[in-house]
Image (cartoon, rainbow, N blue to C red):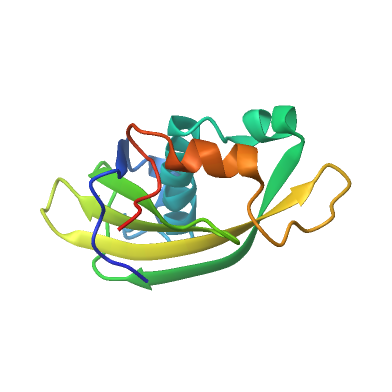
Length: 147
């Protein structure tokens, strides 16, 4: 898991809603995956490869791996910053993310996910298709770092 965001990272902020906490007002551990999904979606949208974009291109993404390390708990009402960036893109799409608590100043979680590309019939693409890779490498926020 690459824990340092790249210059091309995309950031979103969320507030912990009441329905994400337990009776102690602490965020249930499973909701951090949801926060990662919010960040991942923003990152994919920044490259025009979100779900609708992918279907227009004739492809789909599927999450095949998710990793999550909990560092410090968030509580009801906390403001969280989710920063996401691409870590790989040639054969599969790797995305890392950091969930930081703006209220406490502490890091809440580190995460990573891996997506694979399929065609519309569900056949696995062993390399990221050219139209998708072009969007990953295009200049602008959220692009795949070539470093």
